[in-house]
Image: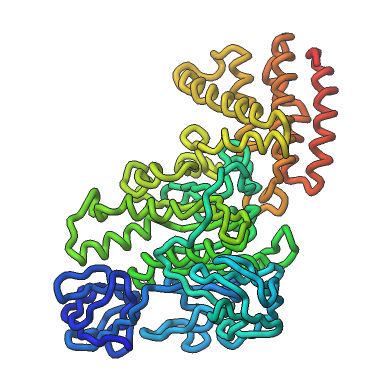
Length: 577
């Protein structure tokens, strides 16, 4: 039975109550409207609760109810294709009940209690099952939703039924405990695993600069910091659309409403390249926009992570996008100030780094309790004020993540998208992934990457000389280096997210693209050695054709034709092929 206390003090979303004796992170219902909140501090006989809804009109003396349970995520069939707020209330359900504006104190379960799912058992009576074992399957869209034994249950199957059930109806009994298709899990607690494994398989995104130069592994952690308008949200949406993950969890954490609206409008229309079905069928969206209560923003990333871990436990690869962790940190800062805690750098709480670490450390490629290999890959967008990458959220994130995709305002001004700076970005997974690239793409793929990075680095060094004396003063060989670097930038690194062909490039094609540019470079150098001017080389028809090739519908045939034509055109210049 819930304990009942009363409100002692109200300070924005932070409410102090007396008369209850809860545990840390228990959920409390505050006031006559029973606004949902979470215990974040206990001192003496007073309990501090952060409320997930607007607290306007609350006054001392109103009742407070302690539920005795932490904030729980409901996990089971029906998650995919759903749109939730930060505490897993289904927004379409709430909209149907009350229109476009959610009223306070109104809630709905995360999973539909009425829908019946067709359950097929994978075990039989008398089988011994352990925690996390797969006991059956449910078809959820085009995916197999594997029903697992809860992590705290194991034993012998007493009985198990096949048929149609709701998520609350028992489907089997294990050593006297009835099991349903729904699990409830505290969002701030990581779900158990057997062990973490090496991150040696890449998350293929179809974005050339990411896959070729700065790859991210499945189970890895990455950050996309950048100022306003540099393309954080578009980059994350591209990752969500095209990465080869089985499930995508997209968390709009404190983002502007119009950006989240774009996600909600475009995702249901997108076609999954794997299945041809709507992409939304393998996506969970958590929408906690900037005009929603700030406290729920802090909880939203944990809700999303728990859902991601649930699908990982089934043996799936999950890609989680958090946009943006800066807004999450700002929510922590606001709540910390209302708690009158000692502020750290720039007013953020002293435990900012610890909270960021706790979140990112839940990523990983793991062996699950069911014996499968699954992964959660986390990519967090960081929105530093004024694009200042030295601020605390960016710096603390960089100490944790292993891939850094640095967005650059200068590239945005030059209309170079994605505006990822190839000189300041890095990936610490390249050595882990080189073996995979050699085996599944091409033996010389890592060497090709190193060649491209070397050319881009030499271009940056030469640009300093060009700014002093002009490009005409450079020798022909250095002029050629600048031209090849320009080809890498304009043909390979620039990618149009809104073009039907250019939006996604398979790894094999990325390799052919870069190999073609390198072959052009080799032939051009031989031509320069034979006293052919660089201006003549850049005016070759094949150079222009190569630039346009990435937009061609039959791009693979076009690249093959370009390679043949390139040889003959250079022979016509007198270069020795």
